[in-house]
Image (tube, rainbow, N blue to C red):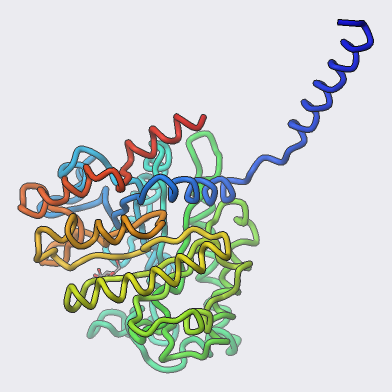
Length: 373
Ligand code: BMA
């Protein structure tokens, strides 16, 4: 090679190196969105709420998980709820200490898992006097009129909202790896807002008020956390959902990173399957057009009365739609479990669900991550 060609080649290589150096690194938020989008091409992750804290017949025992004990693997996604943190409580509404929650969020992230956080805040007008007596007084399910207009427009209640958001922000800020790097999480506030069971539901505020509430939440928490929060917007399953209806309360593309749907089988299997499929067809089309991942941010069949539900009902749905994940709710005692219970007939079907190529658990996404590095 001639001397001049060598010089040219060297300068080109240096140039390329400089360009590579100046490529901005993705933020943790951007990297998580990309990971969700990549994984959505490979399969559907399984998620479980409160997975490492308690299950059927045990509570707060190190390294236990009903999912792990059913199929030998952790869920890929774990869900946690901040309800109560707004009051300065040390435990959430399901008695999970926030310190333990923080530790498990860090542990799940460090093992390569994905974390999602929901929030069932108390009622801003009734919480102080009457929480819990009788239920649902003072809770997220207390639908005493006027909560959303008050926290938006009355100066005293508005300040309360800002204080609540500050407590959420502080907790999210405290989610850092052992070497001090921020942990990206999917945050899913003001969920199931098209129903009437929460005080922020469609029956209790206008679409404009709802959107303002979501946007204000976004602005406040993102004031310091923009690089690490993935924002999920999650209405509830709605038999008459159309794109137009969905858009009525959609906070806007700039405020939402992930399109969610909360879909439980409360009634017949036929209704659940038909409505879930109809809603997902629309939401997946919307997600595709708007370049956003889509997930079943909550789903399940309370106490799983049909053992074959996992592989016969849920799995075919997950096979037919490009979903990043499907998260089932917590395994609480008293017939309120949504995940698998080791040793039951339903656990056998859950193992078939686990073995299906379509479902991704922790080991799958660890392997995919290693593969990409
Ligand atoms: C609901 C129920 C409640 C729980 C709440 C927040 O769906 O499981 O018992 O307090 O979620 O986790």
